[in-house]
Image 1: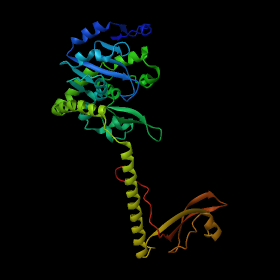
Image 2 (image 1 turned 30 degrees about the vertical axis):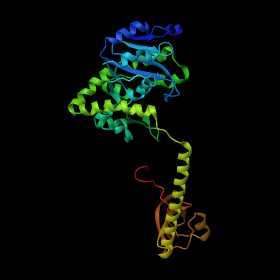
Image 3 (image 1 turned 30 degrees about the horizontal axis):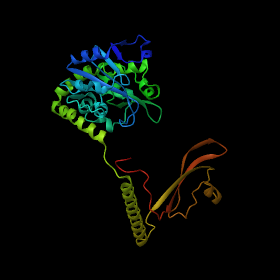
Image 4 (image 1 turned 90 degrees about the horizontal axis):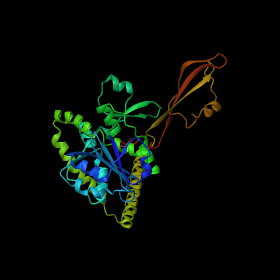
Length: 353
């Protein structure tokens, strides 16, 4: 059951959750040793986007606290106790705790656990068609996406929606999340927030089977310790002198331009010293003509193949019937021209594509 703790009476004009006092909710939570935890915020930057609500609970009952009515710093003693707080991508939520000078010693991140189990696929996996997923009997979590051709594909994901569906067979509705920064705390947002702390323990239990099988417990413990450090680093940021950094960028750009110029000069000098015309370029074109290969110079220029005089005799051959008796057959011409230039590589590099 979802309970709301708030002084905004208008939020209780619904039956999708119940009202409870702050005192009773906190006393209930003190009885738990493992508590599921999540936050809803008005943006992603802890220093400029305020906390909207925070939610704590377990599978049976979830408590959504209205931050404007009961600030999260009232929970400092609970967070800093010996209880373990379970979150999905808890590194984000920890930054808001640090903002309020709250330092929980025991946390578990189910997203990091999932990524560890699948060895970080999310960073590079491009997605496959649904039939491939089914035919190969894959088990990894995914979200549906659309490729460039408009086809549905499955992309590996450790988002809560994907993990809950994969491990528990539960469909979590995440459409409300995109509305939070616009509408604030509404009954729909309260319900959404409460649901996010309902299934984490079940996900954790399912993950534990894989973790024990693959002997990953030490790695998981390390990740759960390090996420606190990583969140603190992100919370503090890094001091940066903008003027000095921009001056460095200008110097680096000048060095880069000089290096590119010297490299281009080297390439051009090399080709000039070695005859230049050491490459050829083949141009292929297909025309509809009569069967006698009649092809005057105007037609040649029309089809864009009159560039330079060919270095070799033109290669001509029939391809297929045009399907039009008045026009005749289709034939192909291949002309090889001197190409005394260096091609620019438009393919990209091995790492960036």
